[in-house]
Amino acid sequence: MALIDKYTNDEFTDFVKNSFSYRELARKIGYKSYSGDLSQILKNKIFELNLSTNHFERDKTKDITRTFDNIFVVIRQQIRKH
Image (cartoon, rainbow, N blue to C red; front, side, top):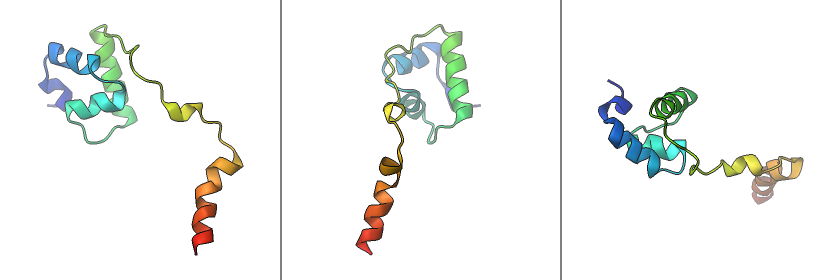
């Protein structure tokens, strides 16, 4: 039995309502890691129960435009320390 199946639909609904991301939802259910497969399982269950995720926050890292400077800045700083 999967962790998600240990909860009633009402319990799962409460988890969704009180989470701000799929990752947080997974943790509340009891999953220790978050993968693409788990993401799809959660999304399917949310769809099946017709729940809203409009309150979930967007992944803020997607708002960052990657450039040579912001990708390699940490590596440059570490090299300078040696």
